[in-house]
Image (tube, rainbow, N blue to C red; front, top):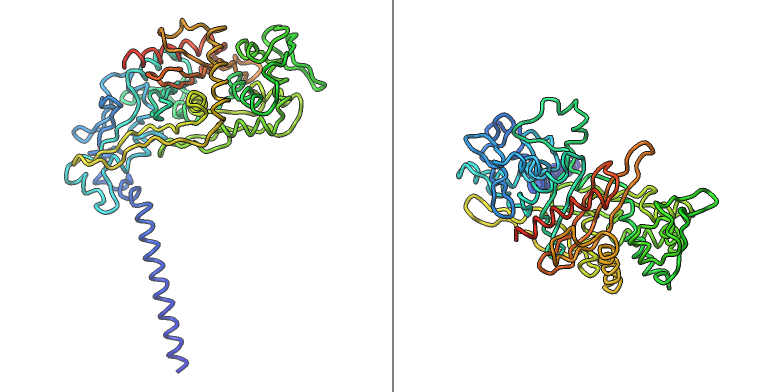
Length: 459
């Protein structure tokens, strides 16, 4: 009797293990089936590492950026379009790991959980992935960077559609340079600087410091700050680019006075400054579909007068991606609520069925409508009082802030410009960084203006 009881127990254990195994397999198939089905180990789907029959990748206007012909994956006809969109579209070898070609290969194969790769086998064509980028505007951005390392990002702050995403250095995926791994000009070429480049924000961060001051320090807008060329502490000085004398916050922002903003940061305090930055997206995960986005970071909670002063002017340990810079500007333009960026508009099967479509999503509120309106007014004043509207086409009403971000003592600072158009017809937010470019207003602003003007003229 005891022996029979033991056999029953063993049988139940065997059944339980079998059931657990079946459940595990089913879950794995649901979550990993696409990767398994489109693995490069499946020789019947790949030729020389290229997924044969993969669907087209197109831009917002339907221009083909990547397609398969005669078992070969080919790219856009224009070589500069190919280079400008390298980090978005990708290559044939997986070097650009964060690209659509790599991260959306399951979609491009036409795979689904029920039918597997039946679509690819039946139609000899996978699904088409339609992007939000404007290829000609991306080409303009690539040319405007002029061979310098950097990034340009533009998105529609009402819908979230990314219109321009360009990272340099780049190369033509159909003509890969022989010296790509040895030439310093291609350093970091496989990294998408728009989503993965982490840089000190420099004076563009003064927008965050201003927001924190408006929300946390009564009377800060009317307070007078004195700049004699530096902000002085017992631990050292923070130099300013000029001696501005007596200035209030509005003028200090337009003239980018380091002395005033180091003092403002100390008036605000480390915890409040960090919280405001986090409300705008620092230390948070920002999504761009399946594409990787590095987290922008800030840590200023310690109220060290000198260190907090550096943080207030965008130096210290603060690091930001161009994508978040763009989203921050979009949040201000949109009344304090950021619209989440997206790059893939829709995925359409070979049979014409829409499998996925992007939806506009609003993120957590960064600041109140009143604070956003105040910031918008200040950023508009920067152009009226300092930069000049002449950079942009008439009537676009640009708002923004330049930045000159120091990196290492023996290197030229990075040039930043981040802003938006206060224009219902052209709701564009943008960010440009030129590595070791120097002055943000002299180097990055003209790039931003050229790209945004091209977008507006194309509409």
